[in-house]
Amino acid sequence: MSSTTRVRDVLTSVTLITVEIEPAGTGSRLVFTYQAVLLDEGERLVNREEGWNSILDKLGVALAAPA
Image (tube, rainbow, N blue to C red; front, side, top):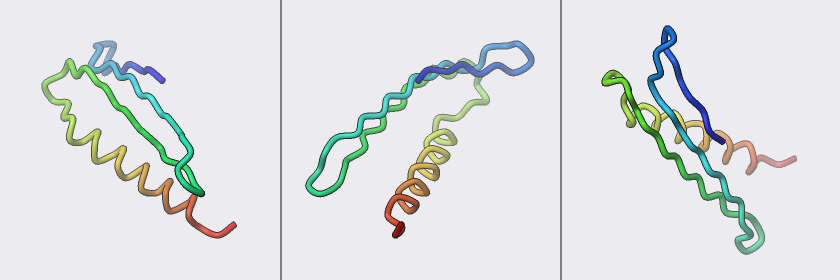
């Protein structure tokens, strides 16, 4: 997946996200690769990392819950 972010018509970032799901024992392994070009000095990669970690943690909890 790729995306761009604009603030008031000014390009602030370009991202490329790759998700791979592969077999792992009796389950699966998710490999998440996030690449970003941050064009605005106010953008912080650590904020993006924290956001994606939170999303992926919640996904893990949801997938581990009994059906």
